Length: 160
Image (cartoon, rainbow, N blue to C red):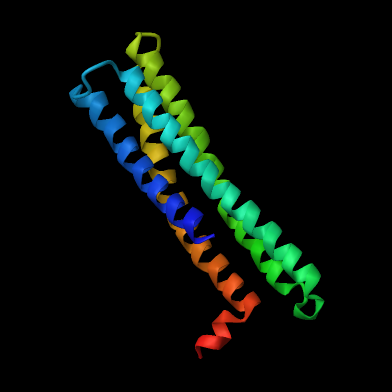
């Protein structure tokens, strides 16, 4: 669990650096090749990072449900809390992923002269906004899910 959580943080941070690089490359052309190669490279990291975050919570939710099924005395409240976390997490995570892919496609279309640069600017600003929003929600979700796991296993009470 901890390995995947830390890997998620690393991948999301690398995604942010890549997103920033795409914006800078659009204006300063520092990437030696063309825009498309940088966009594709960053896309691989970005999509892998967001997918890892979503699957972390899918896996954690399944583990919590299975643990609670084998320990019925704990009730179902912890699983409901995990479900609530996923309801907060998935919309901004999916939105940033969709906006990012649209931005990359529009950047490529702009690069070959098919669309106006304005569309890239709009999508880039929206993607940045949702990247920060999703990252904050993901961080809070990681903290809450860790709290649920600690409470579920009794490790939270053992520290007191």
